[in-house]
Every structure is written in C-alpha cells, then in structure tokens.
Length: 343
Image (tube, rainbow, N blue to C red; front, side, top):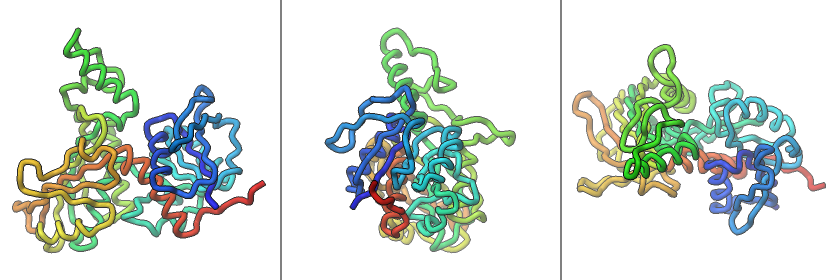
C-alpha cells in the first residue's frame, strides 16, 4: 500500500518538479494532494498522466496524510511546518526556515543519511540550499578520504533559483535587447540578460551575502564544522542549472587520478572529465538530469594537497525537488513514514 502525500506550493517551479519526480521514481503514492494558497484553488497541475486540482492550504486536513513536501517561503514554513508536523506527517521542507535548527536534520541522502533517524523531534526534515546540495555531494567522499582543510567556491547560479519571476525577467530582457531595449530589472537588482550579478540574497554586516553564508553554515552542519569555506555567489543568465568552481585544500595527500576514481564510484555523482574541448559538463547538459556532475578535476600546485573541480547540477532537481524526494525514499526504505489507518 502506498502513502498519502501532499505537495505544498504545488504551483511553483519546485512544487511542480516534486510532483514530476515522485512519479518518475515510482515513489509509492496511494493518494496525492496538490496544496497551494487560496488564490490557486482549482489550478490544475499534472502528476504523471493524471491532472489534479490544487486545494486550499487553509482548509486542508494534514492529519489525513503521511508525508508532506513543502516548497514555500521561509516565513510560510515557519508558521506551517510545525503545525503540519504536529498533525502527524513528516514534513520535508525546501525553504531556509529550519536548516540550522538543532532539532531539525538537514539532509542530503548521499552525505548524511543517518540524520533522518532523529526527524521525529519535530517531524521536520530540511532540504539544503540548492548550491550547497550539489557542493556537499562532491565534497563528502573527498573529505572522508583526505580530510578537507579549506574550500574556496565561486558559484554561477541560474535564474530559476529566483523562481518563475527570475526566469521571466531573463526571457523578457533577452528579447527586448533585440527589439526596443531591455526592460528595467524588477526581480534582480541589475540587468541579468548578457550580464552577471555578483550578489544573491541580502548583505550581512561582514560583506558576505546570506546566500554565501548558507553554503558554509550548511556544509558545516552536514559534513564537518572544522572545514574552512569561503564563497562568492554569482547570478548568471542561464535558465536552469547551477555551476560551481571549487578549490579544495586537504590535510592529507590526494592526487587527481585518485580523486577522479573515487568520485566515479561515489553515489549521486557522474564524472565527465576528458581533457578536450568538449570533455566537461555545462548547466544546459545537466538540465533535467538527476546526478551531480563533476568535471575539470586537476591538481592545484599552489598548495601541498590541493584540487580544483567544476561541479554542475540541475538546481530544480538535485538542488531542490529531487533531494526532497530522495529524502522521502530514504524514509520509506528505513520504515520511518508512519502510515495512518484508512478511514
């Protein structure tokens, strides 16, 4: 018998992708509910070959479902996730609201699967930031082998990370440049078409952005607080797919061939690393795919034990919806989803 599952935020990019992936991986769903705000009541979304209508979050009885996938704002999740968890189902939340809560596991299944075992503290499991999710998948096996000392990351993040409004703005500006000129920015602080913006989120007092701080805080929680990590996050005119240039310094020796072989054998990673003009992955090629792709693996000769990597993933999938569904699969495999008796 399958589970009764609700997807909250079902009309957004990530919510729709959650529905798609639940069906793609044949997650055992007995009944699926698409939940959204009152203004989206009756909006139709697809689940495989089925068309389902959105229900009102204010009126829905969450005690009737076993599992809830949330793709909503942090403020909405702060209000609703504890209420939903108290009603019985496990909540897998994609917002930033619960990631650093000490009583909420922050999980990437390839990295720290055992942390799902203490999800019952609040019945909430947090999904990491999209750029963190792909980074830690690549870092974890290397850390286990040679112990990471320091990481320097520069991200190249697609506009879909800012939602449909970000994608629409890139599309409208790109078209406009060739006609009457690009319309002024609304979602982003500066023009994104034919440009890059070295700013995502909001500035903290130290000059870093909260998007950058998320990456080191979440990496510390999931892998090791002793890792020194510094980040620059950049928005680029790409629709879907985040890329990262990653420089790693290790405590112990590791060469590029050893790293390449290890990553090839590691879960959730696909190594594409040939030293020719097409022997690497771009975000366009990663779009719609499940794995984290690693390319351009090479020695950093400026430190005793250093490597450089190029890490790419579909941010709507591994960076959000796919990771949430993989957490659900992990809960299912370990028998941690409590099914309610049918009325």
